[in-house]
Image (cartoon, rainbow, N blue to C red; front, side):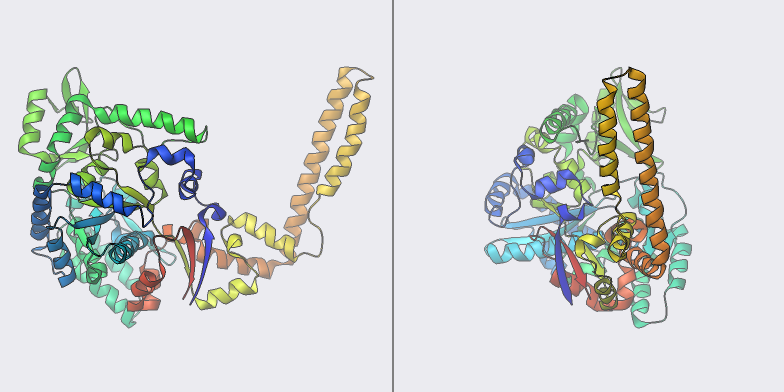
Amino acid sequence: MKKKFISFEETNRFSKLITTYLNQSKELRPFYDAYPSIENFKDQIALKKEQYSFSNRQVLTSALKKQYSSIPHTDQVSKNINLLEKEHTFTITTGHQLSLMSGPLYFLYKIISVINLCKSLKKEYPKFNFVPLYWMASEDHDFEEISSFRYHDKNIRWPGEAAGAVGEMSLENLMSALDVFEQHLDESSNSMILKEWIRDSYRSSKTLSEATLRLVNILFGTYGLVVLEPQVPELKALFKPILKEELTSGPSFKAVNLQVEKLKQNMGSEYSPQVNPREINLFFLTPKGRYRIEKIDNRYHLNGTEQSFSAQEILKLLDKQPEKFSPNVILRPVYQECILPNLCYIGGGGELAYWFQLNSTFAHFNIPFPMLLLRNSALLYSEKLGKKISKLNLKPQDLFLDRNTLLNEKVKQMSSINLDLSPLKEQLKKQFDSLHDLVSQTDASFGGAVAAQQAKQFKGIDHLEKRLLKAQKRVFKDEVDRLLILHETLFPNDSLQERSLNFSSFFVDLGMHFLPFLIENLDPLNPDFLLLEY
């Protein structure tokens, strides 16, 4: 096993917003409360302990016990649920959509970051307990985004579409897609384990929420990970005061818009908000769909339907059936922090980007804003691939170049011919500078002719440079082909491996050693990108 690190900034694969945060630069400082260093958790613990009520703990643990009552789970999970009843127990949370077979690899990295941070915090603060928690985004309605996963070079897709919240989806028409996936698996013991997991999760469940809970519990139950289904009447009841205020006065719209303006001022013209608030940041759930709530002429309309409510009617519905009201991306984090004794949220770059828009909203509702930690990122490759990387003299920075740039750079390195025609451009520029000196001695038409000829000549050199590079690629065809295959293996479709491949692509090789291997090597408090050879 070999480990290498590269900063997120050096990869050139992450936004300026995220690298600014990792550098703890002053531009972003007003948009979060505390950076997630191990020392800063002391104050976060005190803040959450003071503001999170015992009655909320009772409702939370009751809901979790009810949720797990029909699901086989480990003693570690039971222990952690019981610990949540105690005022000195806190959660570290990540959330994710209910992606088929857990979706891309980074889902595992998010959960492992949560598990490992809990371990580090327990060592530093032994008087407190820290429970790793995965929040299922069961109320989401973006079926397209969760309906497929990639196993090696095969894309396994679930046919169909969702009407309402994806968590309630029936799995009836999923079985054919799972059959296709299992046909791609071999007869090895590791493949048999994957098939057993599918049988004990998707093939044994009625809904997508249940299947996801079962699968994640199979993967991480021994580490005490608690999975939460938030679409529960008892938990939504805790959120009713905020839901009511959002319906009647829409405070989040004003707060987020003001914060976005400040972000634009601090981050410059390149900044673009990750999400845009609506006047009411809530949906209404029905068996037929998840409909945005809009207020028009003092009535509350379900966008895309003929249905509407008076203020009195919708508040009565809220009081009796709070589970029908679903927060969108703006208010979902507020709901999470309302019902959990949470200290820190761990997410990807896109998630942190919208959290930075929200701390003024949290302040309005008087809910502590959690610490925000960028999840671990990793590039996994076998020892065999590691040798190929070494043989091609590729540095970590080289691997993260986009494919075309990487090919061009390596061909230039291998070639005995200088493929850079910049010196020729310099000579040409000097000659045209002399011609420009003559322009002042004649009429303007001559100046235009010189400028046009200069542009034509420079364009011609650029064209020759591209042709020369293309010719050398043919000379080094074998090396170029090997490099293409290597890069496609490491960066499928020229994107980060963790955003493409499913964990099953590695599990068939590493089996039950895979998760312990990742848990041993991922460190949530290390702010660098990990390259990990197995």
